Amino acid sequence: MDLTDGYDWILPAVTIVCWILSWLGPRGLRWGLLTVATVLSILCFPLALLMPATPVSPSSNCRPVVECTSLSPLYWGMAGLIGFVCCIALSILTLAIDAIMAALGWSSRHRVDRAERDALG
Image 1 (cartoon, one colour):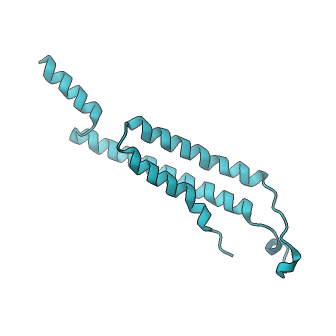
Image 2 (spheres, helix red, strand yellow):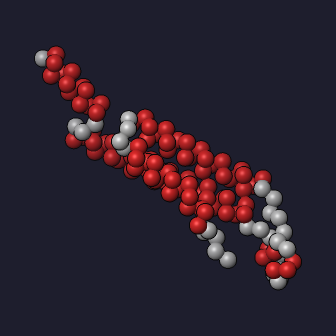
Image 3 (cartoon, one colour):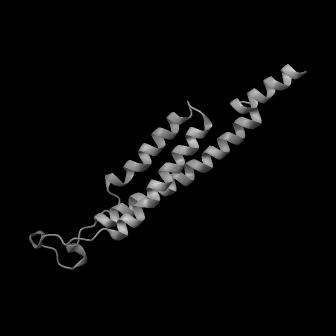
């Protein structure tokens, strides 16, 4: 029994690709994306709890009752967990990169502040 199906990695993969692409846009886009991805990941948990674990057909030659039950709720829970951990890791990474960019003066917000200071004197 493999608990990490390939479908569990769809939400984190889409989140990571969109997060990388969001660096081409404004800062709010990154945080908005991470917020939406976190909410979607968290919504996977109630979905997993509310989803009935349907029995598998008896023709599959399963012995214990657990083996004869569909694992789709468990997969949704795993997808939510993996997605949530991915969002937390990307949030920490975003904070670190923003801090480094601000310290080096690469942030667009700091460039505007510096340009205003230079223009004012």
